[in-house]
Length: 95
Image (cartoon, rainbow, N blue to C red; front, side):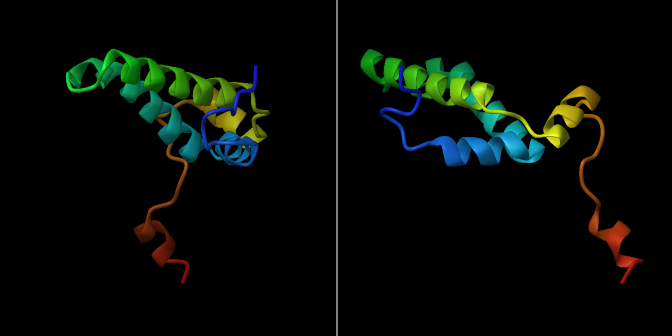
């Protein structure tokens, strides 16, 4: 099965998502939210729903199968409670 057929999300984009925890977290969270809220759109036909489920599934599978960076793996072990960035106020004393 070609993971990328029918969607414009390819291996280059998957590689970017797999190397940056913030992007990975945003993309995977949003794909989950799409599935969770899909039933809330009565104007979407059954065929449209199937298409959304199929395409988001392709994206999720591609992201899952992509090799992950060490930083992403490490942050995955630590969890969401650890801040992965520095606030501007924290940086201002270094200037």
